[in-house]
Image (cartoon, rainbow, N blue to C red; front, side, top):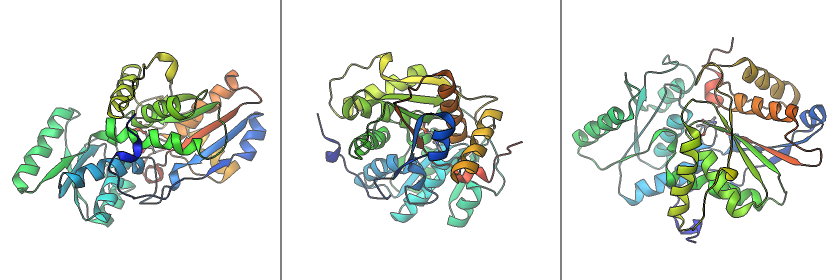
Length: 316
Ligand SMILES: *Cc1c(COP(=O)(O)O)cnc(C)c1O
């Protein structure tokens, strides 16, 4: 195996992120529920994308890029964090965003305004068009550029969450289950692959908050990241567990998700978001209800961030 430490990486965040017990929610559910605070990764408003960007932007730097492109919806946490990280590293970020979701100057759009980020909206959902637009802008600039896919979810970005599994293993607690949101797939795929490598016996559950074919995307990304690491692993459906928590649609609040946001805020003083982490935690609550978790088992919820969206997405 090619160890993770051999991949170029820039230091952007504060790691390891803490693991805390959710005392009140554990008492409420009669189960041992912990939270890993990847909302506190330490740049911008925190969040999961920073772990991926440590690998992706190191690759961009190694290739001599001066401009970094990425994409997502109008309120993409990933795009905002990419702009923050690129600025810190002295690179210029250009966001080519889909005209989806709240485009007004609130939430992540406001944060991008504050950073002076260049944002171009394109009225398409077709990634081929979006990447072609990046190439047009990049070539016209005459500067070397680097394209990061939506959510930073490629084989290299997912290594950030393989590394997160290694980090959890070193935090000296055993978890029977890890639950996270799945939006573009890199977090779930990285964690599930990382669990296979570093957390034997831990089941990883991806709470799908979009309608993409994650039953195909998840194992594909796991295989691609395993290939990068040169580990000869066979990925089987036993290695990842998926649950549909999308509700009315991607980036549209769901009643279950909103209830989970309120529960976490009221009982633990921790803010989730309506697009990802609220829906994901609602999935954890459903699983607890269904008896998926044993009384003696330890369950870890991954807080992937999303604070920017909390101030932009309609929750009623
Ligand atoms: C992007 C994002 C996710 C989903 O992670 P993926 O790797 O894209 O599946 C979850 N939570 C928040 C807050 C995010 O911004």
